[in-house]
Amino acid sequence: MLLFILKRLMGVVVTLFIIITVSFFIMRFAKGSPFSQERDVPVEVIEALKAKYGFDKPLGQQYTQYLKNIMRGDLGLSVKYSNRTVNEIIKISLPKTMQIGFLALLFALVLGLSAGMVAAVKQNTKWDYSVMSLAMFGISVPPLVSGPLLILVFALILGWFPTSGWGSWKHLVLPSLTLGSVYAAYIARLTRGGMLEVIRSNYIRTARAKGLKEHWVVLRHALKGGILPVITFLGPAVAHIMVGSVVVEKIFNTPGMGPYFVDAAFNRDYFLLMGVVIVYSLFLLIMNLLVDIAYGFIDPRIRFE
Image (cartoon, rainbow, N blue to C red; front, top):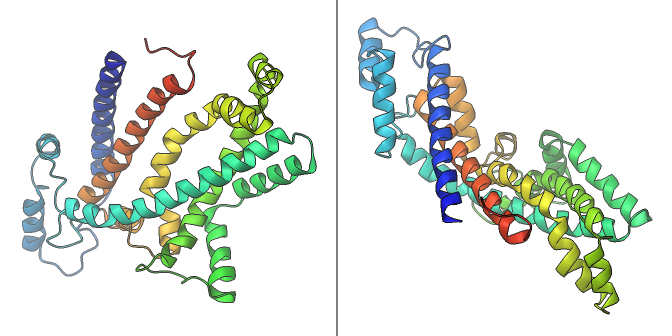
């Protein structure tokens, strides 16, 4: 187990290094610069700004210095947010995104697992057809559509929740439901498919033959084997949910990482854009590592080589 974790950690470091390198050069080779949109600014001022952020140095030297800064935990200065470091922006915005992501993940797991179990146990009944139809609807409707619909119904018509902003628990409800609904639909379908593969297995029949109640057969035996596809899906899904959705945060005007990411892309704010990419990539790699480790505990047939 320890050797497996160490090998995967080395893989995480190498993969993250490749992501940083490729992202760095793609951004720098793109046309334009953070100062290309400036108007009526003397050349001397532009040169001073380039010197301040190190853009006046050769590209290879910029890359080497950036790697050294990352190793010290310094993600650099934001170009468009004057006198603010990328570390400060991420420190402020990431917890807000994580709050929405955690609630969205909780909603997706509770609803998705419950719906998937019902559909598997009640296979080819009206319960199965109803649940899977709703799941397909949830997959087909993107947050760009479901978000405004939730605002229309629960904010404008019923007046239960605010349309946007940040400040109380009510501001978390609609963004979390919008972000989690798509993943709840995927989890429901994966749970149903996984449980149907094991629910007629020999060990399930043995458990029933021993007189174990049906709900314990489902929860203790069928669910444990049936959620393996869900566990695989949760690796990248959890990373994406917890880091947040750009569309959802833009719709509800939440001060998370999403709006900063969009603004950084439009403004060519290299350091801020790289900082968000690094945070997202690191989270994704760690979640995939945790999923691989969880496999060994959930499925005894899997061994760490």
